[in-house]
Image (cartoon, rainbow, N blue to C red; front, top):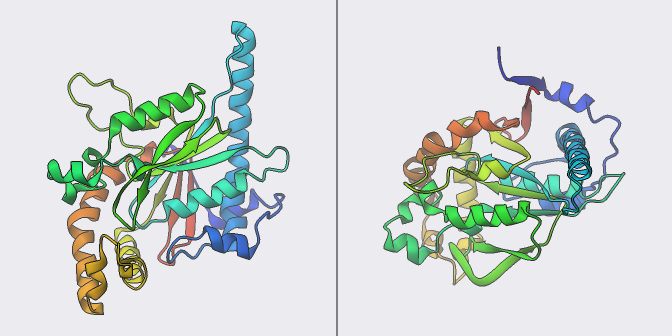
Length: 309
């Protein structure tokens, strides 16, 4: 017995056969992350059925909101539907989030306002992490400003306007001072991050509230550890020839490494930091998701697991 119903890609694709493909190749190319291989075929087979499924969830919540509003006789504003997207470093969370955002905005019945934020923006600044000797734990739960993220999500769910989410720069490996993403009462908000499904242990005296408490739907992107390591190393080598070469890049010293040195460095970082975070914090939260997308070695989704209602 399992709390999930498992679908092969062929079975899952049948759910979206009646849904028209709204994206073209040029649009999809702009949504792909580094070394990502998502194709129009995968959009049709995997992402369109997810979009349609989400439309049912959003419509159901809106009906509940309307019914509750009438029952209570209140004029409360409609609040955003929040989707959490979790998974390891290099698994493709950002690409999945961007593709879903593009599809959700193009629903034929209605064109909702859909926004995406990354929890990277709620990492503590580098100066704080250095002061707390946590630079080697960047991405672990303790490296995030949990209170600020919870306050932000509470405001989103309260219907607040013009909220500011901090911006993180992968070039500078730090929070960008005085730069924000404005979130202004979207219909749907996608929140992607490493540990968004984790419950953890709040500090003594903290409220027993977790990031996932604000989610209406959650997705976990899964893959074998060996595949994740390969994708991380491949991405590191790509960045070595691109971003790392920029004069103001935080990791510019990695651009000077030869191929073997860069590969060994990436594997060491993966083994000592990202793999530890995956096994200790990220992976254990997988079965809290309502939808699990399993990726194969070629970075394509080959299995879908949907939590039974």
